[in-house]
Length: 95
Image (tube, rainbow, N blue to C red; front, side, top):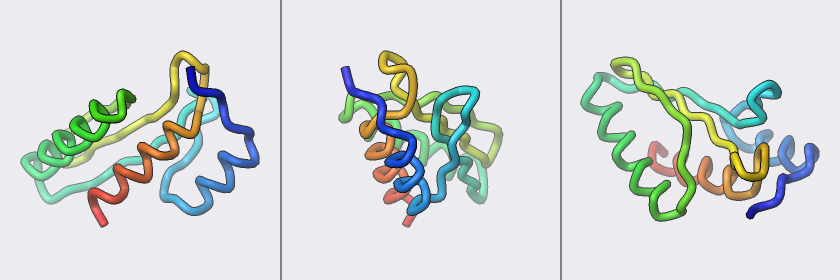
């Protein structure tokens, strides 16, 4: 099981990323907007492949052209380095 990262480490990582921390859910989250449903669904497919390869799966939702993603390591009870790394890989898909 992965270990939780310290608040300072989490905050330092988030300062360099367009993700936010949700204290209540003990997770990091971000929403992504696309031109249409097809682009959003294609993005979700690419994220699914990344997540499966990493063995680390997001909580997410899709509403037409918006994909909302929340990352936490449930077994650890919050944010780990695995979450930060997956968030960076997700961001790289749209850069």
